[in-house]
Length: 335
Image (cartoon, rainbow, N blue to C red; front, top):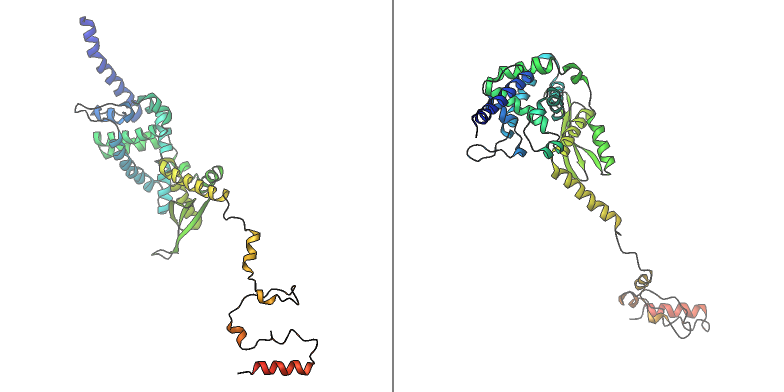
C-alpha cells in the first residue's frame, strides 16, 4: 500500500468527524464536547453496529433518556409561557409539542434524518425513526452539556425559529373524530364507557371514560367534561393503535369472532313435524260409537277418580234428564 493511500485512510475518519461536527453545529447551534454521544444518538438499531465488546450499538437508551428530558424541558417552557392556564391545557400543549409526528417533522426540517445511520429498507418503513433520533439527540445534548444546554436548544433553536408555540397550543386536534373515522373505515364497533362521574377535591365536576373497540379495552381519559375525557381516551387509544400491533390484532380477532357468529345460524330451524310430539294421545277417548271424538291430553289417574262420567255418557238418548242427574249424583257419592 502506498504512503498516500495510508495517509488518506487516516484522514478519512477525521474528515467525516469534522463534517459531523459541522452538521451538528448547524442543527443544535453549538459544537459538541463529546462527539461519541451524538454518534450513538444517530445510530439506529437496524444498522447492526456493535461496540468493541460485541454488544449492539444503537440509540434506544439515549432515546429513553431524551424522552424524559424533553418532557421536563418543554413542560417548563409551556408552564412559563402560558401563565395561569390550567393543568389540562398545559399537558395537552406539551403532548402536541413532543409528539412523534412533531419531532419527526422537526428532524426532517433540520436535516437530522440525513445523518441517521440505518438500514435503507428500515428508513423507508419506519415512520418513527426520525422522531426517535430527535429524542436521542436531546439525550446526547443532556449528557454532553447538561440540562441548561437542552433548554437553550429548545428555546432558541426549536421554539424561536421552527415552532409557533401559540399556534400549536390553540390548534384543536379532534382525536375522537379521528378515532371514529378509523373505526368506521375498518368496520369495527366502538363505544365510550363511563368509568366515573363525580367531583374533585375542589368541587369541580370530573369524568372518566374508556374506549372499547370490539370488546377490547382501549385508552382511558379523564377531564372536566365528558367531551374532554372522551378526547383524552381517544388520543390514548390512537397512540396504542400506532404503537402496539398486538392491540390491533386483538381488535380484529374479536371482530372476526363476532362476524363469524353473525354469519352462522344462531339455532337450528324448528322441525314442524316434531311439534306433534307435544300432543299426547289418549286411546280411551276413541270409542267405537264416536271415533272422531277429539283426543284428550293424558292426565294423572287421580284427577278422574273423584268424578268420572264415562259410565253415564254412552246411553244419553234413552235416559231422561232426571235419570241422568240421578245417575251422576249416585256416581259422585259412591263409596
